[in-house]
Length: 278
Ligand SMILES: Nc1ncnc2c1ncn2[C@@H]1O[C@H](COP(=O)(O)OP(=O)(O)O)[C@@H](O)[C@H]1O
Ligand SMILES: [Mg+2]
Image 1 (cartoon, helix red, strand yellow):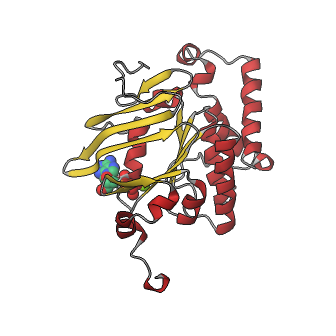
Image 2 (image 1 turned 135 degrees about the vertical axis):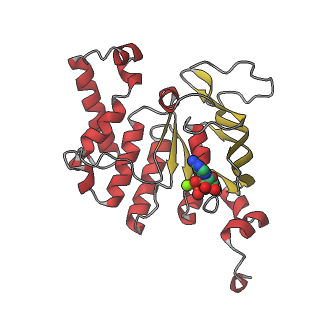
Image 3 (image 1 turned 180 degrees about the horizontal axis):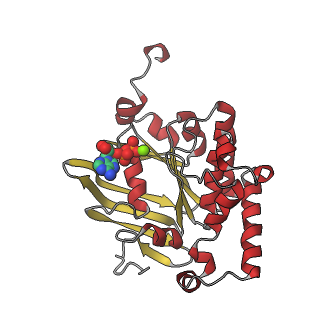
């Protein structure tokens, strides 16, 4: 992937910023999903994106992963391995290889495969085999095979699913399926992990366990996390900073405490304050 040329002097240093979204606009026909969206995420940060349904959160993830190509704006990923990488115009598999992985709002697990096999697919993405070998469909060496097997086991252990390695994905409880998706995404060795509503539909115990897992991914693996989540308790406890989208625009950003008391946010998203609390 070509490094982005002509970084301006005012561009953030790549050691501080992991991804920078600059004035991104995305529309479908008459519908504007993202309107002049700018945001930056610091390396190592857990950044949450919140906002009502239809605000443009998933569209933003799709732009960050090469699924959608915005009509205007720039997205620069500051990879530790490769330096600045311009995302717009690159296909999803190249964005993934550059170091951005994601999970989806609705599950995309392979139900007919085991938990082990689901994770191993992530581990065996071309960045580990080497692009040339993948292109030529060269057989994997036994050493490569052993390495990806042991990495797969490590990741299953990390997300607490080692004991369920041989279970079909379809047989796992809902909370475990969400953890498995995270393990699969981690298999590609990302520097930045995008989670689209990871706790949606989980029960309180599963939610608490997911929060702990996300903290571990961030703190123990050193992965920056960009998180879309509706559960405010989870967002407030996990996020270092929050960006609020409404009708495709950034209407607020700041620490959880700052965002919580921002009048625009209260009006657009959190609901008017309860007079009982006054
Ligand atoms: N592929 C698409 N084609 C047409 N409209 C789309 C497409 N993807 C998203 N949109 C529109 O963009 C807006 C934002 O959607 P989305 O990003 O899914 O919001 P959120 O994830 O915040 O709920 C919605 O109006 C949605 O209908
Ligand atoms: Mg969405």
